[in-house]
Length: 260
Image (cartoon, rainbow, N blue to C red; front, side, top):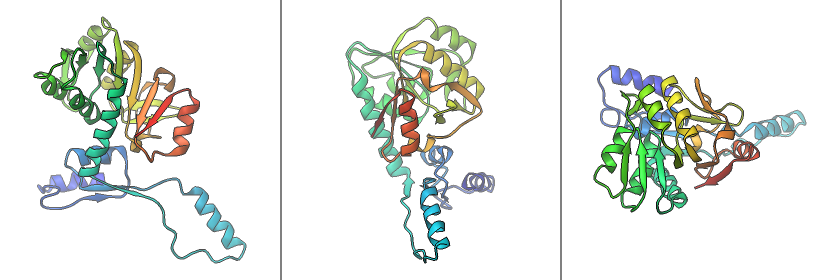
């Protein structure tokens, strides 16, 4: 609901965090992206893992017991400060997978950008990306930068399309740091945009090791365009406090999971 209000606020010509503060209680992946872009003040990751607690309360009531009037539920408030901190912590951990001489491919988005920031001072590695922001960040760095060509897609801040697919197929990356809007144990990895999904598929096929770096708020989420089943990724890096049931399902699929 907060995302709909955000649209109305912007249409009214008001600036979020200046003229008005917008606080959500959904904790959805889109809300996290809106915080990083300054279009939402904060959100609460309202935990869905209260089913057992609810049934216990109902069973107690049926048996004539009086439920407690106050039952605390653990939720987390996320704003621009701790959102950036979590991104930085994930990105810093990802550098542990990189060795001297590695060829790295960075996907698009704020998580991939955070990883790029960690790589600026690295020596003797090659970084390939289709993200315009990452290209600009690494242009003056110590890494060898390879820019993936294509048609610029403003929503993704990336160069996509047939030119990109053809280019990617001629390379073999040691590691792909893959990002996505959602990851689900049954549906796999997904994004809203068809063009972006096709591009990610090409990147996956060109990588020896696929490391999905995905915020905990995106776990259990499904979007229109399927990128790949879980069998196509080797590692998932996500935040501490991620839904334990979803984490266990992903582990059961044979994926190494790291919580940071």
